[in-house]
Amino acid sequence: MIPPDHPRYRSLVTRELLAESARKGIVSLEGLTAHGRGESFDYFIGERTTESALLAERTAAALLLAACEPVISVNGNTAALAAREIAALQKACGAKVEVNLFHRTEERVNLIETLLRSAGADVFYGRAERLLPLSHDRAWCRREGMFAADVILVPLEDGDRCEALVGMGKTVIAIDLNPLSRTARSATLTIVDELTRALPNITDACKTLSGAERGRLLAALDNNYHLSEAIREMTKRLSHALD
Image 1 (cartoon, rainbow, N blue to C red):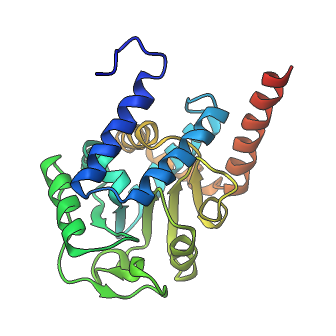
Image 2 (spheres, rainbow, N blue to C red; image 1 turned 90 degrees about the horizontal axis):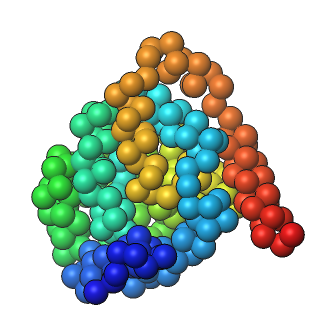
């Protein structure tokens, strides 16, 4: 039992949730390592949503709302941590929700799809095909889903798939706490924020953005700005810590 007054209560609860999800087969063991790496970068931004991240989240909402075929791509960690948030965002923007895994088995796909549906998401499923130009199992997707999408939100992404999707002419929105990762640098728009903070902010923006603001955000999209601002925030905090 983790006491609520523990200074790292939220972090410890999240770790317990991921560990339990790994025991159930939803999260891969490798996914636990990936979460720890991301959490270390969250320390660097003060475990908060920065101004530049909030701007990126509103820009992400504008991209999703302007899309013809938006898709939210979900892996095991995303489903375990934010199934309800994914369902809420889907309702706000009308995107398809599709499961895509690096460590792929049909059993894991079914477990994750069941979890998402139980949280209220309308999961897009059907026969998967090896359609993406990748040599591993993230190449498997649905022809009428991710393959046909013009805008794809990819939380907690692998860099090579992000590069492949951008190379196919798709607009890719990444949620990645590491602004130096291949994913962050190759995405069309990178949100440097923690998943369960970022998704509700995108959902709120989908509900509140005016047409005029959507146009301004799309016209001003500059991923280099968001990455440089995230690095500036981290550098500033590290500098203060050493003073």
